[in-house]
Amino acid sequence: GAGVSQSPSNKVTEKGKDVELRCDPISGHTALYWYRQSLGQGLEFLIYFQGNSAPDKSGLPSDRFSAERTGGSVSTLTIQRTQQEDSAVYLCASSLFVNSPLHFGNGTRLTVT
Amino acid sequence: GQNIDQPTEMTATEGAIVQINCTYQTSGFNGLFWYQQHAGEAPTFLSYNVLDGLEEKGRFSSFLSRSKGYSYLLLKELQMKDSASYLCAVRDSTGGDYKLSFGAGTTVTVRA
Image (cartoon, rainbow over all chains, first blue to last red; front, side, top):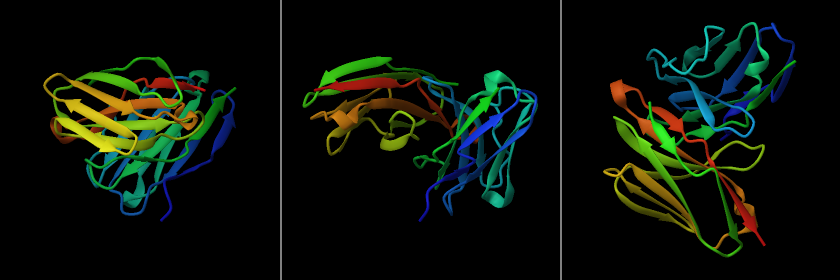
């Protein structure tokens, strides 16, 4: 079947605007993760959803960041009042079970001007 | 959280062997993963270790020692296409969560 799908693939926005990034995980995968990767850097954990449990939000860098996962499937990462330091590639990943390998989408490249 | 350390860069010759080390500190270890990431692309899964020992998969092998908080990824018979960043990731199940944290990655350059 299809892999993890993210949209848009590229997003350019002005400082102060809100953006929404979408992730469609692999069908049947119970866990969904959001990471952020700045140029030349490693993956920074943002948030993790597992089934119907409360998400682990410990990686969200500020209260401008939020995420939801509707119906245990599609997830949206929202960044309010974007800042230039938010510019990065935002990667979504899903896994079948909690201890299964993660499968990554191709990411959304966010540029805040 | 975890402290995951791996070298920043390594260079090797086509056909050679390269070993990428990863050390970690975690209270609730629940598995170690290696991912490959080519420039501009998403990470792809290479290997998974949860018990001590060596896991071999073709030209790639991964080793784990839980008591030492240590893993390595071994790439044999290097090919030019192996030039990429290699990410070590550790899963921690403290508190019932299964967060996967990544190291900063090791950029491997394969020379002809």
